[in-house]
Image (cartoon, rainbow, N blue to C red; front, side, top):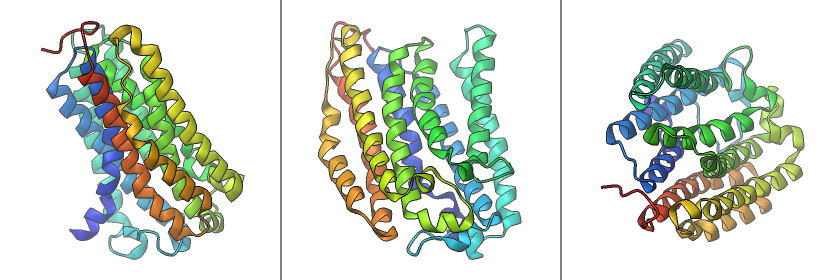
Length: 310
């Protein structure tokens, strides 16, 4: 059981759930909240993240990447022998079926009463998310080995998760929701970039061409700073642009600025895999806190410009 818990990597789940929480809080700020839908979207996001974790464990092992992992990096279940490749492959297939079922249930519940095209659109989006979760290191077209992981993280941890959850709650589209989604997506890409800077040398030995590996350590550090800066820029732009709708300019999320600044400085100074590894969890938790404070700050600051929640 301990080996399976390790393979599921529960510490990664809060980052996936942060996108759902933010989208739901932003919808609640506009007066819309469906508890059943929140549960369904949270379960679906959890299934996607677990699928990604299992598929990555299996894919890196099959490609031999885990034989070169940096010292101090977390042990992988298949490569360490704790679980067999066959057992994890079965778990990947089972989780895929579960994710498909949850996607269908969430899409149906969230688009009920709308034209069938919306249901089909969300089913297609869910299928793309499932393919993305499986395809980072697994399969012939593993995009994580081609330097495309950052793009998929920004898209699915960002606008897809946040704006998608908002749309299902409200059944209305608002282009402004792409901005907070972009902020979370950029921060999530920062977590991935820290991971790739940690494994830069060992990934090269394994033939894993991450974006950090292609840029080199110096440019990857600059890229890290730019990810965080533009994430904050997107959030600040959103606060001002949405103000005419809610009459709110809450900057409660700014409480995380000193924390993220400290993480950015440490990342700039880091040189060893161990130093990068120590920053992964803090940045992930700071991103979760940022998302919660951004959404909650607007919700509690709501006034007569917003539709009453109750």
